Figure (cartoon, rainbow, N blue to C red):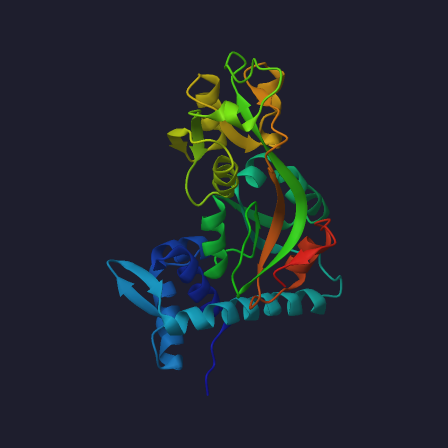
Length: 300
């Protein structure tokens, strides 16, 4: 009879997420030998390894990838059992791992997390900010509980829920020839120099869609941070297509100017991303309940 303990499951999950026994032991306040023994005992009971050993790091094998979401669910249910069994019905506690693409993580983090943090102060939030492609990959390997991204997500294992409307604008330094024109038309953008986000970014996808409807220009720089792009544009290196919410300070300071481009469709939808196989325990349900979702759902 298999008798795997919550401690063994906890060690397994932390090694899977962190990639090493040492890192897992440090986070769980265990000695490294104790963590190694817990993993070895779990694998002995399963009669199969759950990790492939590769150059000093542990990577989940096929069996481990299948078991990881089940182990996470068992740990969450164990915590919920303890909370419900308490006479005082303790407040929500634990850890919620959230991924946010750059626009959300850098400019809308208050909207995303503020209400939940105030309502559940004992919950530890682990926020990872990266481009949409990276957040989606982390959702698929179960290293995040929920994501909030700018780009469209089409994957059979993922569900997306519309969260906020968002839009991009084309910006330039105030002394740029396009910024001095009273009205613009697509032909004015011929041979324009562009500063773009890196591939894998949702902002890059929207920018490329806009550029495809304009005369050919030249990409002079690719950067992975919006703030770096703003600095490059302000320095006269080119023009850029960026989220409007990210430009408030630069516009107020007069460092950038928004170009009027009614002929471009720069709207997009910000979405929450959930793994369809992930258990939605009390923490995740509380977060979703407080997220003020748009009524529409896509990819469900």
